[in-house]
Length: 271
Image 1 (cartoon, one colour):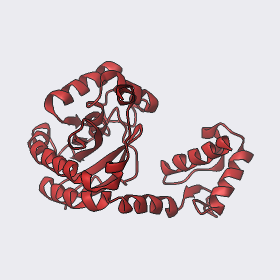
Image 2 (cartoon, rainbow, N blue to C red):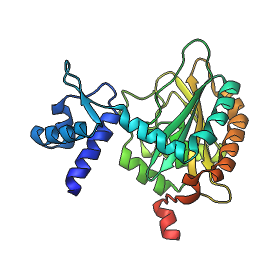
Image 3 (cartoon, helix red, strand yellow):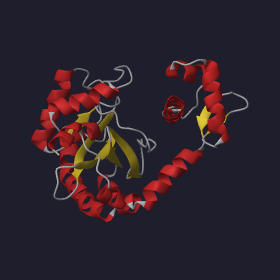
């Protein structure tokens, strides 16, 4: 049963990262299982309303049920009510995209955003995706709050990524990543210039639960490198820190942050 459940959830995760949908054989190959087994699992997920198949292209994709469940969960726990006004104010001041990522187990997932750009190119990705830790400013902001050993353990789970899909300044080695984390700890924020994607710049800070060393999320500002130079990003750091401070204080009003502990391995050992 656990194997079936694992495979079914893996299908959901695979499709969540493939918004355009996938063919049956691709899903089977990624799971390393026979196509017949993948077909049965997809059939069950479709019966339950989590997956649908396009009649023309035969591609499988997630339904909105998964997204709806996530939004309902976040809403009931007060996270979106707490975060959105802060994100909107920061986006208005920065004039660029602001995103909030929440730490959950070994992942940093973007759950909310606010767009401050009113003209020109607008960088506006979908929420609900996991941040790539080795290349994003949000990932660096979180990783910098832990030891190098713990940071590398998390990155090893996810990998350094495909250099062809990342920006020219992405850290692709352990040494390069550790240098980025050292600079993040020195400055108090992560600054990325064309790292996660070509032509994209970003700055991020970690959000910690008040009175603890527990990192609960990361707040970032991102936009085209043509509009966000290094100097401009650094000038936004005080506003970014202030907003992160607001979210930190407000987190005490959320049952999610108040009642759930997500420990890193080092924290588990300490307790």
